[in-house]
Every structure is written in C-alpha cells, then in structure tokens.
Amino acid sequence: MEDARAERVVRTGQGLELRLGPVGAEDRRALFALFAGVVERGEGFPQAPPLTDDDFEAAWGSGTRMVVAARHDASLAGAYALKANFPGRAGHIANAGYVVDRAWRRHGVARALVEDSLERAAALGFDAMQFNLVFASNPARRLYEELGFEVTGRVPAAVEGEDAFVSYRTLATRP
Image (tube, rainbow, N blue to C red; front, side, top):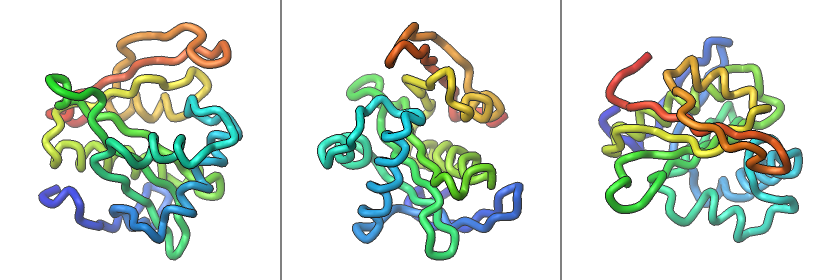
C-alpha cells in the first residue's frame, strides 16, 4: 500500500464489498455509538460502561495515527484505531483496536479490518504490531493467530477475573 491514507475497496471472503478509509468528522457519532455498544456488552475493551466522551477520545482520538472505517453502502460496519503501542524508542511497534457492528459480524469485516491495519501500519513505517489485552473470551483470538500473531504473554485475571493475552507479530513477513 503506497498511500496509507487512501481509501480502498475490498471484497470479503463472504462476498461483502467494503470501502476502507479514514474516518471523517461525520463518522464520530456512529463510531461513538458502535464503540459504546461494545463497551456496554463487555466485548473486548477494558473501558467501563457507560462510555464517556473522554473514554472515547482516549481510545479513538488522542495519540492515534489514523482511524479507519469499514463501510458497506451507507453503513458503518466496523472500524479500527491505529497508533504506536509505546512512545519513544519502542514507537516502531504498532497497536490497533477493532470494533465490528453486530449486524456485520460473520461477514469477514474483522478480517478485512485487521489485514488492512497490518498493511497501513507497515506503510506508516511500523515494523511490528502488538495487542496488549486480548481477552480469553474474544473470538478474534483465532483470527489473530491465523494472521500470524503469536501469544507472547498472559495476564491472569486482567479485567474482572478474565485472563488476557499479549499477542505480537512482525510486519516484515506475511502468513
């Protein structure tokens, strides 16, 4: 990917056509609602409900290199926030957080988002991607492993008694 900010169209393995590109100000309300629903249901982020504007800004605003939306027709099917996992000397390692609207799950949206984030991270100069807290109950763990992520650590009882895993992969090699 030459231009990390370019919009692109992909077709998922399930045949769904998605437009993947940076979010705009017009997407904020829909993205907030999507993320708030994920937080409310406890589906993979450590924020406590109800989601506040400050919580949203910390996850999807300040410090992010880019936020990318997956759109199908006029619907926001999902999104991810891409940022450096750590500042300074470890700033070459990316981190991303993903959300998929419940109506679009099992349509390949998550895979499209993760694959897109790996390409955009590499185009932005990152050489690795790390996820800090992948909850044991998160069904995306299998997807991450299929895409070359390795579990490098376990955090026992990370949030409300549930274990979480640290996962990592380089961006130099593709699975």
